[in-house]
Length: 217
Ligand SMILES: [Zn+2]
Image 1 (cartoon, rainbow, N blue to C red):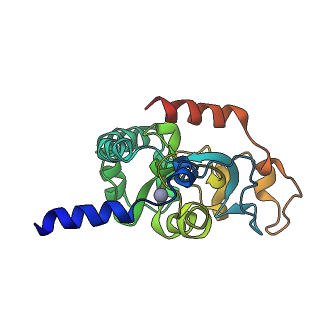
Image 2 (cartoon, protein in one colour; image 1 turned 30 degrees about the vertical axis):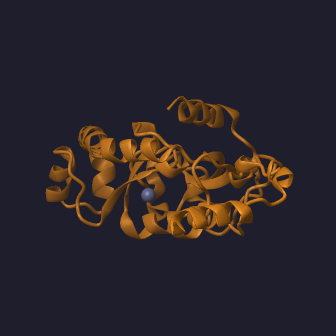
């Protein structure tokens, strides 16, 4: 019977140095070197958002899927809230009255996007404090120019220190129109970047919050 022959031969072939194989560490595939410095950038903010160091931790695929499917409901609530509380900021972003009405009803107007400041892929949650409503052209740069190059190859379970564009705002403020803010640092001339390195320092509160939540799921 050829079937038996096949199995037999296969066994023979597998009769290799089995001792050496026990040394193979399966978990070595997942990178979790938190001692490694984050990637360096030659800018410390992008489109008015500061680069902030966080621990990016890729949740299970199931968890990611669940959070993505829950997002549409939470996004709706977020937009309704923004519509109630941030009407002036929406107008300042250039939204028409019609678009503002859409936001009040919980819909995203064309050309805008609700962005996860810490993306779901990095362990981010569907929480208002992790959302910012912003126009698409600056939005995509956050991913393409800052986050993607740092996390493109990370697998489930991987942990890595990365820089993400951060703002405490829930509605994006165009850096050209920062009059809402305390008009100290924003009204100074463009290009005169202060030589501060606060972004490079780990923010333990932020990190702990995300790390704890991420691992709970
Ligand atoms: Zn985004």
